[in-house]
Image 1 (cartoon, rainbow, N blue to C red):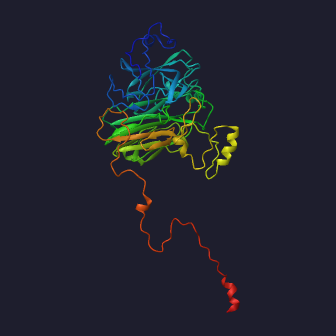
Image 2 (cartoon, rainbow, N blue to C red):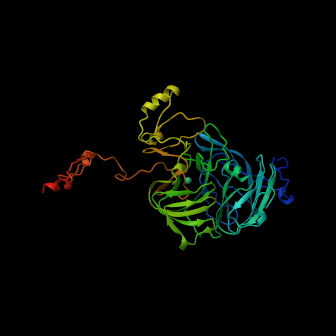
Image 3 (cartoon, rainbow, N blue to C red):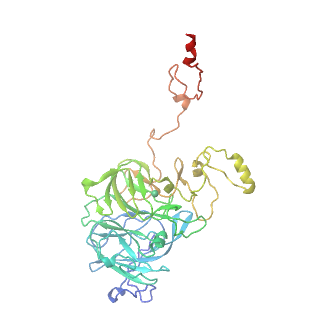
Length: 461
Ligand SMILES: [Cu+2]
């Protein structure tokens, strides 16, 4: 849980440098709240300022703020963090306020926001407010629109939120390194009228990716595409919380992509409409139906649907390598190969060597092989019927009857009504009676008849 202490003026002895913040604000930088773990926090209802319906950040939280006159004040601290990607694996990342991604910033169209950014990284940084309309000098591009925020310094950004929508924040200084290390967050701007575009449950997460070699903790920052941890909010399956909804709830999911490839996000059992893009809300008449929404690099998408089908519905990226954890992309394909003799030979040199893959990789989902320190099996996770054989960008939409409106806790596995689960067929009892003379489908025998070519008869006629 994060420590949501009362905001106090920063004491003179504080480690927070206020060198670059002018006198008026220097006396009153709000205390920076910090999250200690990767639990999904309940939505943070607004206690001051205009009303809105808060979002739920998957495996994340919303940054508390305070009003100072008519300014909404936030305090981000860029710093090294330890993030649990899933039970059994931690990343030594960079983030904001104790976690990666940083906390979600939520505010309302028309709000004046003042965001303090303190840098506790070993190098300079700057924060870009991705998608926002703002004065050029507040855009956060190091060197171009501002000097970099040096280690120990605190900068302040001030702008008015001109439109509602789903936005992001991320560094625009040594961007490749800092984003590969996990620095990013969501910035949600709610409509001025809380009744506009109202939904019952409003989830949000970022798509991000890490390349952390088994046995190590720090992401390789020079990797472009072959990541081994494909994450939602710096979590991978089975560490990603389910999205829980009551039957009949109107659900919105906001997704931003800060990886270096696109992610087609697919939801089972429901069709949804794309109601938001980078440019804000899509006019209702222009929203289009989908069951998979492709989210390109640097894009945001909001989708909406009515959760009217009870069950445990898979929700995942449709690139199958992105629903795997640590894997070797250069492993040979052995489907159809008899590996027994090879296993014996290699076993002489490497005792315990296990050749696999001749019948596909599915057996790996149930296998408990010894792993190097600090990594996760490629295919993992269990549900009520056995191994799920997934990893990475995979979670479950859990739709249940009669959930209280603020209830987001995992309801466990779905209890299917009798007769509604695909099941084993007793082949002998269920075999359809076969018409006499019909081909036996079990038979693979092919009868071959030799026929004398007609031409060879002709001289006899
Ligand atoms: Cu993907």
